[in-house]
Image 1 (cartoon, rainbow, N blue to C red):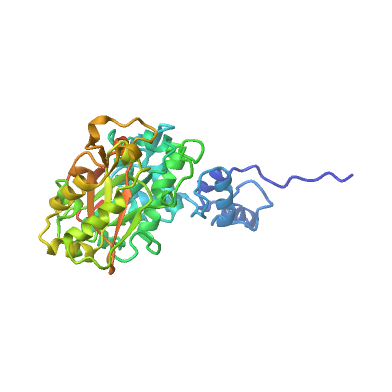
Image 2 (image 1 turned 45 degrees about the horizontal axis):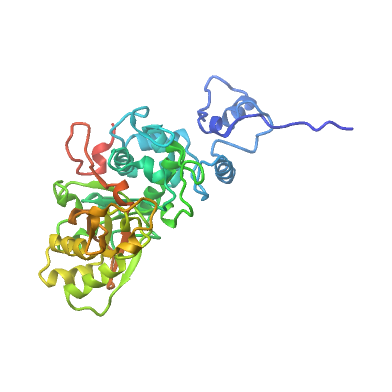
Length: 397
């Protein structure tokens, strides 16, 4: 019986990806030149495989090792990583934070690896870094967000001039699909949770059913068409600065109101859509995300309503009956009950109101994770503490 010869070299995919493809200049033989061009430096059977990895093979291998979200990835080669480092305010081995539940070290190298895999461009790196940095804030409670059976997802919003520089979508279809920055930065955040935090479905992420929002949930505010101050200004940042806000939110839900002509009527439709039993807010009041279209915002502002008025109105009127609200996983605290109704927010500050999207009389709302997660906003700053005017300010010469 003829013995089967094992032609595999035993190289791991991880080893192949970090091999340097540079040729040795002191070797002159054809064999040496071919060998230095190969992915595997030892096997003579890999002559057909050269420096550029087989994308399909890498994607499948990474998927089988639970490194990906199930979609194809870009191989994170050393050359690609170095392009990302150029746009970072840190060094490759600097640790931004520890991400639970694994308490994985979020180094710049690891963040860049996930950015490459997600399909990000190198100049997206400053935004990705700030999003990952925001997740480590204690009030965000990433540990709880990852561990819960609730389908809460990481939603990230960008404000400031960087939205235009990176050509993010703030208008029609801003929640997807179709925009490179929105899609890949959101995806990179999720891959960081897989590969750094260890939050893989059924292991570190215990959401009962998950959510499409867990693939990518990322957009920019449409500041030019908003009658009110943008979110980052509301939170104390200069208007000319750029900032990233991370939130723990459910999948967005549409509010369709094409007929209302007054601010009160539009807001009543929004409040009625928000006021649902079964959301986390109904038994543990917390943040709500309200993404108002420019047309709805124009109607509300035209009625003389300031941003704080809108937030107050939603806070006061987004309520559910106590007998329906007190059915969640945590027992309802009676301090949130008034006249046998439960408020979905603790204060007007829990209403995160932004303007985004294009033509159409729609608003999108998303319930949060109750008191278990609070949004965090991080400004894009350089090493000297100044605000970055452009991603080019990060470039390392």
